[in-house]
Length: 417
Image (cartoon, rainbow, N blue to C red; front, side, top):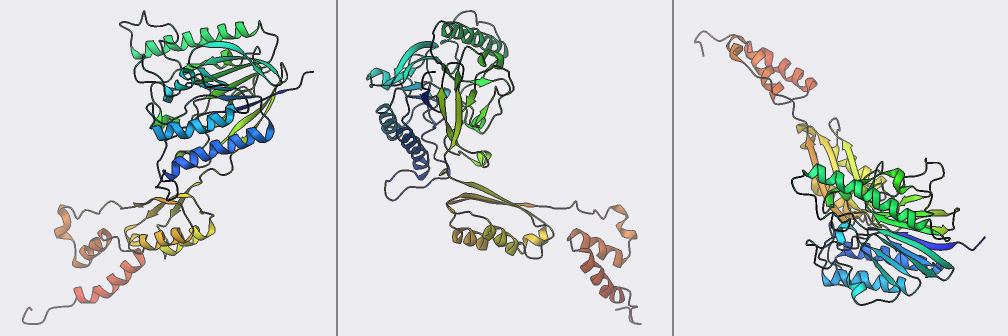
């Protein structure tokens, strides 16, 4: 048996995602930009330490289709470092595409300059890439658009739903054609794609997605003629072929950094693959230094001291360097005892990176209307209705009514005053 070919698979770098960031005093760059490029640094370190043979980047280098020169520079530094170690395949994702068909994509410059050891993958094609441990058949399936799949004609008069169905059908046909070509090569075979596979679980990518989306059939992608399928586009790491007998690993590596609170509990990382014809193994490698996001959700509607309760929760959690939001449920009464300033001070003491928000949901019971029959109510009954509308707690309301009763029911003196 030949020695496994060591493949590093990552995707969805989204350089330029700067929400919840601030200017770094040392570099002048946005701190969230540094989060993302430092995760690429971690990947480069792993590649160097483990001696990778092939690097697959499965699309979405940048947040924007027109990244700034600074964002392009920071990404290029890391691709240069990876290409010094092994061949690098750069697949085009939907965030890499130009807004107009004839314009250059955000990563096309690598092909234009002929950067050594970097292979731009912007078409549905295949090639044999030589690595230090042997050749690999690599097929590429970038983000599906009609022009790439030869669908410029025959679209007039169709609805968007009809066009998407036509595009999905053509994508499945094209993937089958690539598998047929792979079967001709007696070597490890790898497919890399940037699209949605039926049955995959979405993450926060839907909130920042550029363009529409189509699905490829899982059975078409999880074809035994492949030894590994390296996917990008969906930010949540997952394998979508584990329950299919005889299928190769079809794996979304997931994004390399957390984007927002929708990814708060997601573990970010990349995949380390031991590529062998018919016997590939792989593992997910977590990126442990990702920016933590933390939501503090508390029901304080019956709290005697809501501020103290939140502070205790802050002190019980490890919030150092985290992006934090506080979500509290209150009543009008407990809201009056809630100090946002003290909460912010406690979060700063805890070493939080950014306080994203402190959100209050105040429960306001429906008001009791006096109605047209209020004239028939006694003074004590009117007072009770008033106290209910003011949301006075039942125990205190009863005490006030007890004190008010002798006053309201006292007889007037002889003068009528």
